[in-house]
Image (cartoon, rainbow, N blue to C red):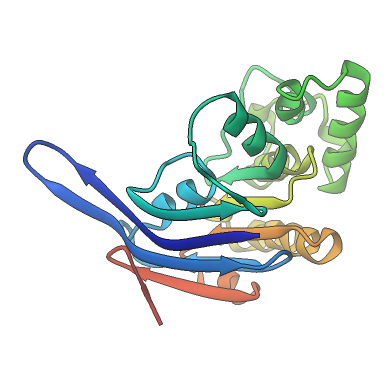
Length: 221
């Protein structure tokens, strides 16, 4: 489902060159739940952005869902990202002026899904994360755990093959964090959704199938 071969990422300015990722090789089969761990600044989010086609490697090959990625810009790659990938962020990235159901509908707008079908799909996704009674609420009326549930609903509303989660429990207490992890592991086991999660929490990482560690941009055992 996800394959990276000899991927490097180097940031250059006029005076300095910084290696964010160094010779990353990764193979994530369909249905696997992978966690990525490492100290701050080790390249975890850079790696997730490359898998999510939000950033381009300096060199190396990237293949997502059986498609080798050759372009990181344009309408085609944007549509591919919208259809195949779902994103969950530590800081939720909900639009405060929109209700829960309107936030969850957003990815479907870019697919030009009709309003009736869009609303039905959004309501089903919200119900699946246990927020049926919160559909008309706004983000300011929700707890941190509820906001993350909305973010998960938004990520899964279009039935993506892959979910990429960047510290999804990082802003939550242990109880809410475990609830979010239960939703993710349920999606993985029930829908066979491939999940790649960046985390600092060993306890959360233990709930996944496989652990990858990064240090200074390189894979470590």
